[in-house]
Image (cartoon, rainbow, N blue to C red; front, side, top):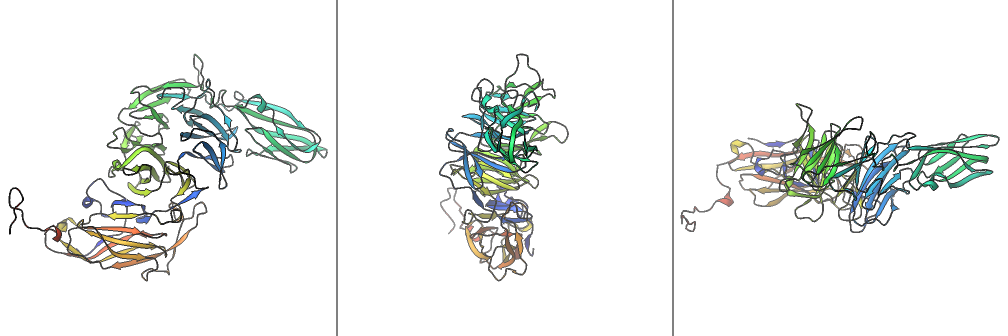
Length: 629
């Protein structure tokens, strides 16, 4: 055997079996290295979003969207619900329960684009055109407070304050018509001025209302001037006049192009607690589209999360079981059955819906947690559970505060090591290639947007963008990559070996410094060489631009790109004859680094003996105390 050549890294971490039995390019363990595009790459860093927070956690993180597609980031931390205005976290609601979890859901209708928020303190509705304002929807008769999702024009709530923990509450189906929308025609705004300010009359009728669809008109210069609602909180007229409206509070400011006579405004308003998403009531003889109350009591375990399956049914993942709820197209028949009794999740965020099925960390057996997907049986229409990444030992981590989400092609899992008190591990799982990599960030909540992944911290009241840039807030990432216990081919696996040179090839930032270690027969790692970005083995004539985000080669979200250069390094390590060798890589500075090829060059094969450090005199007595002299 002349050489061992690894020129495609495509296995990630395999930690369930002995390191000698792993695929040739697999890692037995790693931290902050990503297996991608046939390489192992140093993971990207993180940057703060807004100001750094005090010690604590984030209990809710969510992207909302304005009607024009503009994005708004919301969070709940400590006792405050906030949104990000530029780079400043701005208060929306204060005085909430410290540490309480909050749930968010987006909804878009003819009335606008909204984020609904619910937790132990209340049930709130925010029009994203006016994110600093909110409507408090909670009504103990008509709705409740709990965790929420919205699907097919209906809100589903569970973990309710005023119901058992095995109960689902369903809202009316929002009809988006005159059943729920009220039209106000020609409301008098004023006369004899250019600018008019005030509050539309609808708000005086009920604090639960919000308005939309304004048409403002008046006469200026002897002809009609008409304003059209842009649906983003602004109005513009046919003569260049401008206006603003807060759809939640009804506060307006309208400026005509000249002095206006008899300004009037026609608009609509809604109250979501009446036949809307915040109305859970139903008739004694229920009819379609009304609210409903569904109990899922068998087993008595708490409903943790509700998700939509590939078959359009609702799956309630409980602590030790799961229910399947199917609603007929006419909304009159509800089939509510136990789906499985051998699956469950320990935290409500430990599951997510994907294009392939519902993915969750099955912790029904806490000693053997398994990442599981509910997907279609290839031979039929049934939804069945399947184990994902069976080569990875998920039992190495604790999932009591687990969060799972999708990000591009990956499934990302926030969890904690057995030695940690909070989540500091993010498992990056690629279901297409079967790769799992281990990264380290303090994460308890994910929120993704436009190729970027945002997280709420499990240590401070802070939000970060992770897998972005090449430093951890100015510091180098803690990292290592430990390869297979390599014995080469089976024919020489138990024979002693040497090799003359170790060669490594890839890309490196000029500022990066990478240490290479080798362990022979588990004797401890020895530093055998260093890859320097400023070394003479680096080809500066062939620069490559590396994007500032882990996904793809291009810049995403305006992130700064850097230039990396090819290196091809040969190391002559000192060694004795060995049975196996294990490679370890540690990057020590800030900057991009990857490896695409590792070569053990000129392997020499010797006798089949134990490695020298294991050779000792033969024990011959039955009690093992006497040896040959």
